[in-house]
Length: 383
Ligand code: GDD
Ligand code: MN
Image (cartoon, rainbow, N blue to C red; front, top):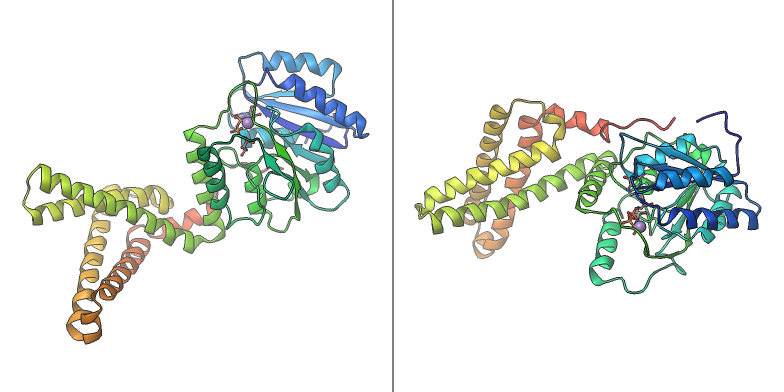
């Protein structure tokens, strides 16, 4: 952290990407809050090369206000921008908020005090605790989007709103945190997941929709979020998350299997047994590719062809085991002969277990284990 700037009570880190329409009002309101509450504060704007005049405006504001501008020319991304800002911050308490006035500057003292008084290590501006709210008029899609994203993080933190991006943290807590650098947006979630011992407190806020400028949350950010979740869950529950992911890939393979079969049999009019064999190869190839890329991404350096062939062999054996279990159970037991569906389930479970273990131990091998320890890709420590 830079030594030449005098330390302050509170550093407010604001990541910006084309926020010329909002940043001035944000700075004004923050300054009013600082003086009304006797907080010696600074505003650190971390801009990723906006071409809309954000930089020029911040440079002008910096002449009369406690504003510092950090510009990144090559890097992009909200979360890494926040980390960059925090690295240069001088405050005892560090706070992160959006530039678009979604997070009320007037709530900053509540968050600051909660941390500074020692009541907690991380104070979170929360939409989802009592007293917290969002603007009216959120459509079903938006609500669902937010709720689904939040519930996907349930296994990582008890915090009700780990996605809001409005939080304050004690400097020492951040400095002793493991390396952070989530892909995408969710810096707070990363912190909460990696610092389970930090005491978090949620403080209700009213989250307002942005009035000016455009949101940068696009499909890419949603995919990055899924990747981020994958990394966090894998670090916390390596085996369980691997099995779950393997199952999910397998389910998607089932859809591919059906699609390929229909195409071969119904449209290309191939004999049904040949179609079945063909669709199996297509689906197994699909599963192999996704498992290589996602589930066991540590094994990506291996040669493709033998790995693919090995995976097909394991899958075919698993299929035989699945079918054979059914046959054996129904042929040898009156109970299963009556409860054939149960025999099917037993076959599926046996087949899946063999499939997973075969892939884990024989096909993707130790490379998979290497990926577990590695956590997030390409991250630099905060310190
Ligand atoms: N430096 C930098 N680089 N800043 C960025 C980047 C980037 O690549 N992308 C976005 N920002 C800044 C924006 O300028 C804004 O200040 C803030 O990050 C949030 O981005 P928005 O574009 O307003 O996205 P959002 O409203 O969808 O997301 C925010 O609200 C969500 C809750 O609804 C974020 O705070 C999310 O973390 C939060 O979940
Ligand atoms: Mn926003």
